[in-house]
Amino acid sequence: RILERLRLDGRVAYVTGGGQGIGRAFAHALGEAGAKVAVVDLVLAKAEAVACELSLKGNLALAADVSKPEDVQSMVDAIVARWGTVHIACNNAGINLNSASEETSLEEWDKTFNVNLRGLFLCCQVSAAGRIMLNQGYGKIINTASMAIVLQNPYFNYYRCYLNQLNLYWEGVNH
Image (cartoon, rainbow, N blue to C red; front, side, top):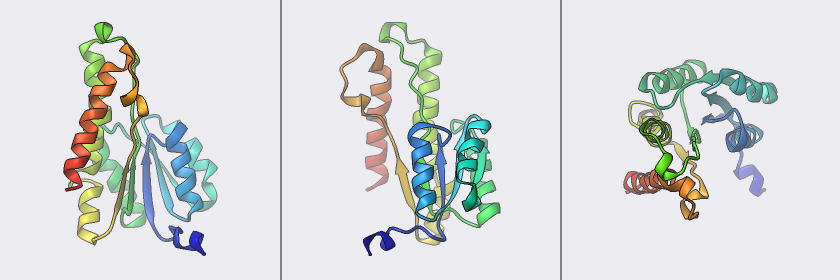
């Protein structure tokens, strides 16, 4: 009986970074619970492979760079065109380039923050899925982040910086 209450039949979800790892697992879990799932990845072939694994559920594969507002809007537009709405946003896309603090280039810093923090902001922002959820009076946003925030490792310093910012941002959104 408890599992019946966890069903997501009729719900529409997307998973960014859905082409591998935790994102792939999220896509499978949402699909197994009955949701229609848009698998989103920077690399379309990865998204297609996961969507193919879920093919009996009629899922969708999309390519998007979450650091680009036009890609995020196109992603949401494609989902809405296909299924009419978005109920669940699983913002999972993220990168860690693993360089020591003294070797981290400005390009690496910017790329990490653009994908991990700006991308999350764009996916939650009112112009994308967040606005749809507000207008329909229902929605769930799942943001994932790494446990690297607790690691004392010189290769994670700038990555830990992003994780702290993510936590602060999300605390503000939830109040």
